Image (cartoon, rainbow, N blue to C red; front, side, top):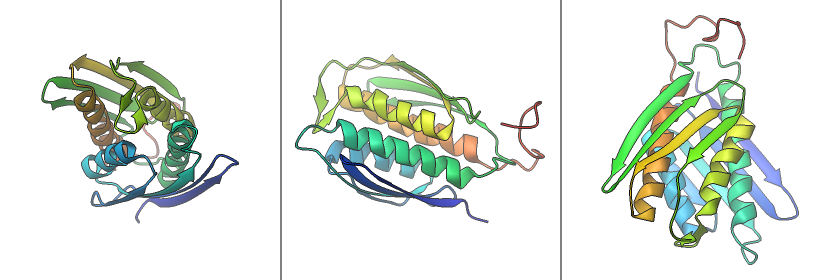
Length: 195
């Protein structure tokens, strides 16, 4: 049974539609209005083997803040919805991704207890048309709405594009591992019996 979901989020600032297939092939159709962000979301899909569709319109005449954050909220909700009871999942995922000069570590736990530890500094205010400070805000929104404990740590890197790309690739790969079904897991992987 494929784990799929759709989430729509409409506010006075944005109109977001996200569909997610956890058991996909890495296909993505992305239209956020923020080119660099679409590029990053594509890395999550491709390297996590998720099918991800994002259709968004927002107040980009102000800046990209509301659009990026609201997509993070909707993606997190879609992930939580697609995972359902979380029975049988590996729960934990870890990866370290090199991208030329950059090296990024990502570790996460689908625990139901949201927490973000983001250890990364960008030296430019924008990459393409995306504010670099919104990268942390995107991951925070995903964590809060999917119930993820996420640690993202930049171990090396000078080029801001490479650092960001390594982050999104590492996240996709770690999330793929955490959402994978492990036949050895009965119920949920917790001594409490619940997540």
